[in-house]
Amino acid sequence: MTTAPTPAGFRCGYIAIVGRPNVGKSTLMNTLIGAKVSITSRKAQTTRHRITGIQTVSDAQFIYVDTPGFQTRHSNALNKTLNKTVTNTLESSDVILFIVEAGTFGPADEQVMNLLPKNVPVLLVINKSDRVKDKAVLMPFAQQIAARFDFAAIVPVSAKLRFQLDGLQNEIKKHLPENEPVFGEDDITDRSEKFLASEIVREKLFRFVGDELPYTSTVLIEKFEQEGNLRRIFAAILVERDGHKSMIIGNKGARLKEVSTQARLDMEKLFGGPVYLEIWVKVKSGWADNEAGLRAYGYE
Image 1 (cartoon, rainbow, N blue to C red):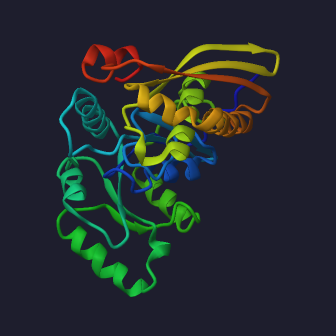
Image 2: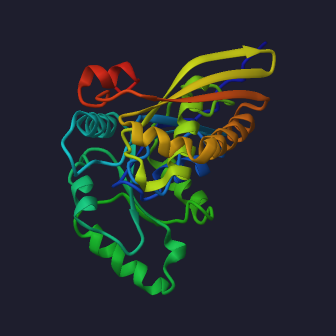
């Protein structure tokens, strides 16, 4: 099988997506690549890993890196690890997307902006711009932020509605280096199906249990088997207290059943085949309190 030569002038590079928690970083990346590889939730601090999403077009390959929201509260081992992931990603990227929410710029946004390197092109992306009724206020809002940093471009978007995303990608492409593609043209992420399965369960967990559950709760895939097109997945939700366990299970197991059903449907859509999913809830206190515990559960 012959591989087609890379067109002259082909561009390829890494694009870091950064911002305070809950500004829509994961939604933006998922929409840009056309697949759900980074989980979304109204609960802040949902993304914990450095997650790569890949989009390849005729003349460019965009390698997006969705980072955890920079943590400004609680200096525990998990938050320190998340912040280290953010800073390491910034230093190794070709382009940075600094995401803010339209009409809102506070101390947490300022802290992230202070991390932005001066030697990498940074695009100011104003997300959720569809929510601003008076569009005339967007320009002065953008100018106020731009007065604090030398941005390569300012692009108002709505990740949810796909507004201005083509324009955003055109701006990104201008700053990507001329390179051969790093990934295959059909690749959408560098993460394994096992990892994606754990993230999907975690997303549903936060969606159906809500703010009552500490964000330190995590999901461990204990077994992942594939027979033909069928995937058998056995997952454990790790919580720190018995009270959290009963909260997830719900009345007669109803809440855990809903989490499992919705997670299975998302997996089947992403993996393109049937999924058999079993989920248990286990109490394992203290797993997020030290770096060894974090490494054991995949935190880098």
